[in-house]
Image 1: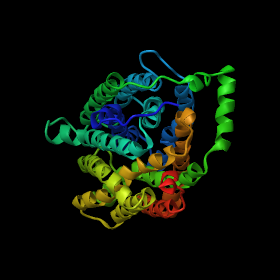
Image 2 (image 1 turned 90 degrees about the vertical axis):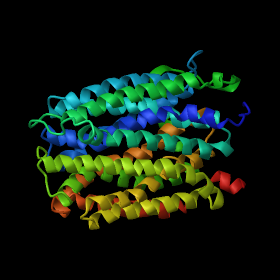
Image 3 (image 1 turned 45 degrees about the vertical axis):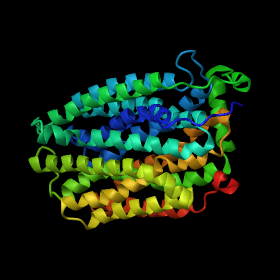
Image 4 (image 1 turned 135 degrees about the horizontal axis):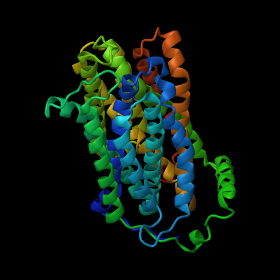
Length: 435
């Protein structure tokens, strides 16, 4: 096994830079896909099930990509970077197509393709940190990823607002047509995604496999691959199982927020459900600003988390951030002034920064190096499973329990975030035990 030298700040910067583009794409998706679906005729109660593509593609794609990237070695591109490049090319194409969808079913299909592309590019980035960095630098490595996720998401979230208010590109369109401000935002996102990932591909290197890893190549074709993936589900380290429960409640809350914030804010605060009206689109653009704020906060908090974790420990740091996120989401229920939503987003941003870094930092110390990519892929089951659950039950809850008022979905999300924080206390951190 190779001894991993400590990397410089700029080396960690370069290897993480691709996440800027990936999150640029995710931000456009999170803040605009519900808007696109509603514009093309989707009913509010149908939004969760239409979003099912996001978790299902993660569930199917990420373990496979993790498994394959563990067993890949290209003489020029290495182990993880071939997947970065493939995912970026496919993502750029799908980002260009989805805002031009002529019908709802085409937009839904493009969401499936777009999410698959995002997952192909994203999954190996988590293992990339485990591959390249010694344990003492992994918290910083995942925090750097969180920083770029925040920066990319800010840029992606504010674009429709910027195009409308500063470049005077129309934010309205005939019924069933996506506004030009949204279309141009997705075009810029496609370019940003591709450039950012190419930066990491061409500015970073990878360690070649040692003799042990060379023997760990695919055997028996596709059947063997799926058999090994299935068997690996029963070999998860204890820490991974404990973190899985934390992840469930964290990502249930996030998915509730991504699905329902536009509908909740436009109805609860702006008083409109008419997707063709100026007031609805003003509210939808403001949601983009709110999402930009929480991602901007996440980019800043990413630098605070490592010293906070060092002063307390990684579990306590994660608990604090999740509690702030719970307060942020729950507080939206009590707000009538849209400006105050920015305060709520500060708490959400703190939680988002920690969710993107701390569970992976804790997990990486308990994983075997030769299966880092695979287990990181399996770990993402516990991101997508709560999203599938949310997609399955939130629509029913909002319609039958909450009188079709989506603001209650955000309140449920806040409670779920509090639960995730408390459950963090039950996690065993191997690095903490060693210290």
